[in-house]
Amino acid sequence: MIDTFEEFERELWPQGRSYNVSASKEVFKTHVKANFDLAKWGLVYHVPSFEEYMEVGEVEVAVYATLASRYMSKGKMAAKEAFEWLKSRPKIVQSLCVKGRLMDDIIGFQDDISRGYVTNAVSCYMKQYGVSENEAFRELNIMVGEADKIINEEFLTITGVRHCVLKAVIDLARMIHVCYNGYEGYTDPQGKIKEYMTSMFVDQIRL
Image 1 (cartoon, rainbow, N blue to C red):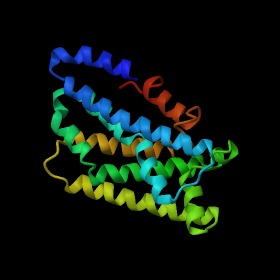
Image 2: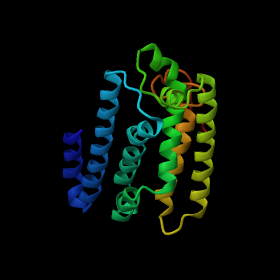
Image 3: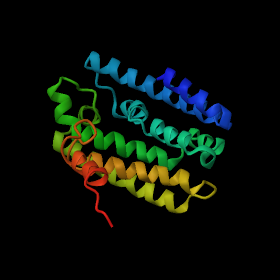
Image 4: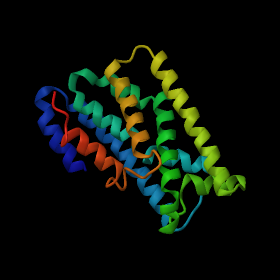
């Protein structure tokens, strides 16, 4: 990954966009550390508190890393201000992290358990609050709904941030909803996601 960023840096340096690359690299380092932290918990079948899990899991779900990549590719439209805004952990992005983490874990729960992987938001919630699997699903889905409300409200009320920067957040929110809308579309894209991609890029409607 670092080698790839170095390639980006060599390409973007003449355009005066090297800051975009270095800022994105730092976000990715944070993402990778969170990935390692979850992996270490998973290897020893550790089920942390729900809050402790979400603190790491919200970073590992790669919302910040994905947005940083988008901003890096935007060039001068998303300059230093966009990365500083992202670094401030704005409420709209935090809520998107919650949405992504919980939807991923709810849809992927049975697959995680079948592989012996217990470090999951559902497991953590069940253990901490002593509730059943169905009760945990219900409560976590309520949290997803609340996160959606915050995302929409923030998008409509935030000022002083470029529209293209905010639109990247909303686009990612839509993508998460499509990928985890009753199926694990990100991990296993052979079903609905493949159909969507084919309809968009292969079987296009010609006007």
